[in-house]
Image (tube, rainbow, N blue to C red; front, side, top):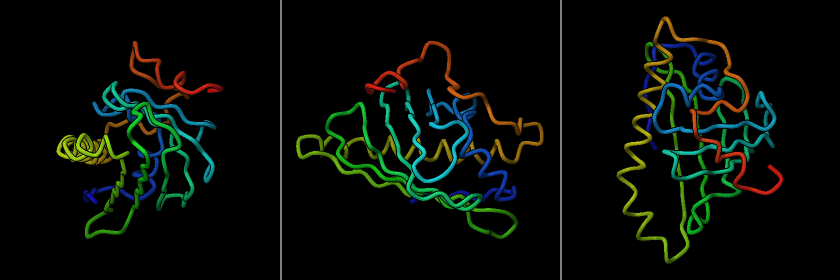
Length: 166
């Protein structure tokens, strides 16, 4: 679990973490597609590519507007990754809002050493995203409108084609 305190209201944090624009101002998310667009609640899916290396299809089962969402992975491009779940909670904090990010992952037995070895990279990625959300939310000049559906960095179209029927 990691968290960051942000000098912004919960609605602003929610707008950022449920938006497509993450790919434009954080290095971790290199492709992001919501189904449906815009996201609408439990049952919503999202395909996220991280560092152009790993793509995860996520299905949201908790969606509390301006407060919290939780999802589990229903498919990944890394065969040894068996289970992934994440929870992002927006809580009151002194002087603003706290964004709390909880991540849990389980690998198949042959991939467990790789999962353990990647922990420092995962922690660094979480730190980068949380810091980026804080900087973006606190920026007075940051755009506040939702990016278009299917926002991607140039040259990265892998997310939408990893699973049949996407």
